Image 1 (cartoon, rainbow, N blue to C red):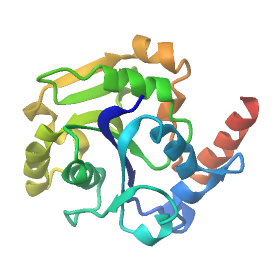
Image 2: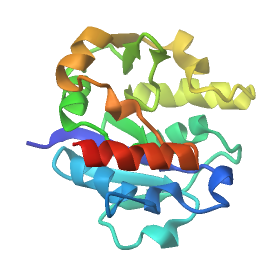
Image 3: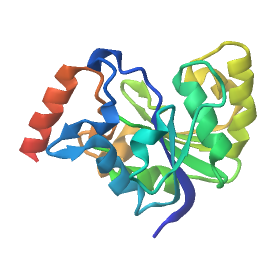
Image 4: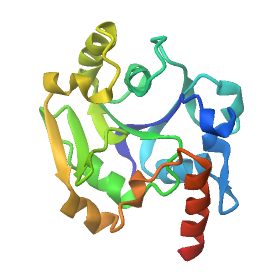
Length: 200
């Protein structure tokens, strides 16, 4: 079953620790990270959006590709762009470097959408996970306000919207090791991800 909800993959980082190489196109277990995310998304969402400033690299996938609307290079501009292009009232977001994104966890987040709630977000002992969360189209104006005030952290607009936090205990029922939140920030992270794949 596909939800009436868009899925957005953010690929706007500078990738400085990888000499400019696109993290999403790196392979883990002989499969590109982007393919791993796409294969999860395609069975869930009726619309898949990629936010990227390098669209030509992704023409081989059946996704809508859009670039940032605001010029600031930060995750919040990516969230804004995803909401701007989304055709649905709710949109799930993930970063392009999360190779172990768990479908059951996404189902739990999307299934927790309710009237009047603007953000459905995981909360673990490490804090909130704003790049594995659902945002409503009502967030776009508060996001624009934050960007206009040079407040570039995603959570900067949270005080202006209604948030539903999904606790760690519920998240672990679907993703026991919380690997959905594991992302590739360095070559060391990539090496560890390869070891994790082999243990599966």
